[in-house]
Image (cartoon, rainbow, N blue to C red):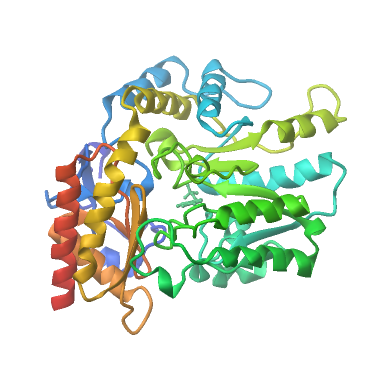
Length: 447
Ligand SMILES: Cc1ncc(COP(=O)(O)O)c(C=O)c1O
């Protein structure tokens, strides 16, 4: 099939091994998306659907933004690629400055990666490099959290805590990683916003520090709101307590804001929303509105200084032996700059904040549907948890299919439906999402 004829079903679906997909089932009954505009997607049957998860939390500014397409196209015409090692071009510096203006104070050194997974992998390596720069080479342990998702490289997989992502690969995971328990507590069912209970779950970090020696732990990584597992909102005081324990033991704190970054909570970063400042922030997805892969690690200035200052390498040799062929490539940077312009021009984070209560009310209005066992949410993200049917994941996928037929698209992870509308949604779009979710879930219940 030629590229100009992409809207039909391809002649063969066999060769493409699809990621995170039940390939056998999908290929019998494919769901192909052909067009995207604003908050709507169209599939290969010409059916229009509302995008209720911003792709994979990627496109909060809506699909088909001309400003972004034009910026990328212009950039490709002028400079399509330049190698990023010991060379560069102005755009990546400009974008770093723009990003650093929005990150919490002091977290203003920007390392570009390719995606969220490589951002996490990079943060892990920077943590080790920083401690070594400070003369502390015995810290090698990392702490993650059950039900966390940090991506799919070996380091990111290891610090993550979603069982299916880990169990096949147990033999090759990174050594020295411990996990705190998650905060998916029974009393948090149908709690809107931050739960009042559960702050004590943070004491798991203290317990791990006691068992393994806080002085051996390089960093603790958490998603401020666990996204992929179905929106686990941190209990009140939980993140602050994690920060305090990290400080007590000299452990670095990494917030993985690949989902929560760039306005999803109503603030630029969840760190600002919850008033807790980590040492590093990872981001990806919305950085380019999802159109070109890009990941970012924002690092505390003093950590950057420590690594650079401690380097005894000869001139021309990197202080940090780490980087990617696609670190801050021109097309991704052009998209990133166009996105920053839209954030500012359209006051996007406030727009998300203002729409959040309406969205959360809509989400919780589905509470009466009997196969829903929990609804959680914060800002413009929410998780609807379906009652498990004989095996995990079955009810989630069946519900997804019924909702797809009802005209609302999103991602399910296991039995959780991930709902994360675009920030450009108006109330009528939120109403449409909720209405179609109700139809889809009701049809699933009848099936
Ligand atoms: C919190 C978090 N970290 C990291 C990742 C990995 O990002 P990517 O798929 O771009 O590698 C994801 C992806 O969903 C994520 O949600």
